[in-house]
Amino acid sequence: MDIDYSKIRVYKDRIRIFFILYFFGEDYQESSRPNCCKVLHSEVRIQKIDFLLRNPDYLAYELLELIRTGSVNKTEIRDVIKKIFVDNEPEVRRLEMEKFFFGAYEDIDQVIAFLISCGFIEYSSERDKSLRVIKKSYYVTNEAHEKMIENLKSLEVLNWYVNRCGVIKKYFGDYSGSNLKALQYQIDEYRNTSYKEYISDIQELVKSQFFEEFGENL
Image (tube, rainbow, N blue to C red):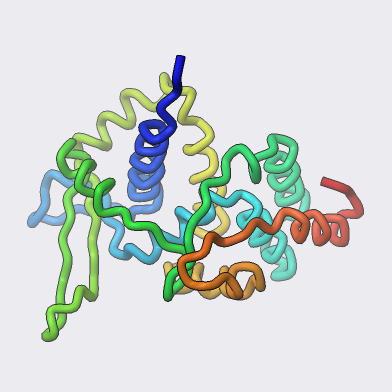
């Protein structure tokens, strides 16, 4: 049986983007949108979180960098990174992203349009005097929230996305899109990627730094 990988990719994109909106959105209770319960105000933040979901080796690198701040549990970080590599995530979970003017980016308009058509989210934008979009807001509906509560436990195939969003939120949930972009630009392989080229993996860099930190091979 032939596998239509393009359709699989479409489903993956829809799942990832919705999960980002759902798990990273702020609680929302406003009379202007009584049918919505969460909101995320920045597409930049969506793109930067998506990059970490799609590139487990970069997430591992950022977790290693957190150790230097002294604000995290080293053993916990070690275990998370070891599992990423034991499960071969940098290979099997990687979805390449291109480098644009402001870092990793992929057009999500079609995904957002689909989620709107399903009644899962609502969307609004604000423009300045020159009609340039300056703020995008994505609202998760009560209907989507109820369906998540009802069905998520029975959809074991999605557990990886749920758990990974949990890890990213735990350690980087307070970071803005600009903060995450700044972290990613500190990595040479990311920063030095040319416009519209795919950002290369950093598995060997992570393995080297992990050994320096813990004296163990990945």
